[in-house]
Image 1 (tube, rainbow, N blue to C red):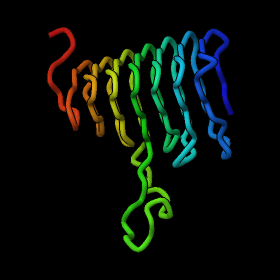
Image 2 (cartoon, helix red, strand yellow; image 1 turned 180 degrees about the vertical axis):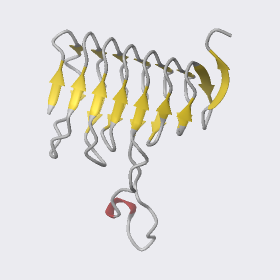
Image 3 (cartoon, one colour; image 1 turned 90 degrees about the vertical axis):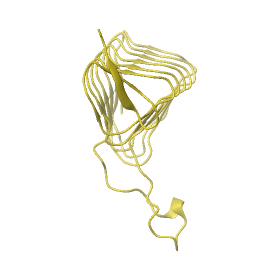
Image 4 (cartoon, rainbow, N blue to C red; image 1 turned 30 degrees about the horizontal axis):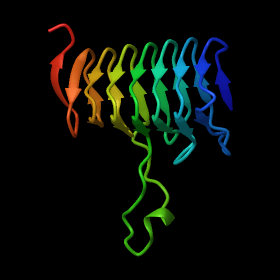
Length: 163
């Protein structure tokens, strides 16, 4: 189920796959999805909601997993990965690909007015507060304070906007 606001701009080179489970994917007003962005239903049936006035740049991959909710005016730089899913790996007698997925950690929630730098990875259970800035190459998990600046692997608070 794909719903795209008529004012959104989706590159013809973007790849938004249909879900066999009927996972809803919604793209808001005036949002831009660039070439080579991939939205892939995998690892669960969580909805993907992208708000208004967002920009998702080339090479970004979003797995539906346990769901992604992106607020308004969010900027996602090139080659980011949003992965709200976790492979099970506990049974060493089975191949990882045969074990399915772990329970949800809550999906991914990104507040309004957030910037994700290039090559950022956002994992299941991440809650990125409104106004956050995430440095390029960071790995985000857990909850991030609003209007804060984060960097690193894993991402740690290194400052605040306006300081």
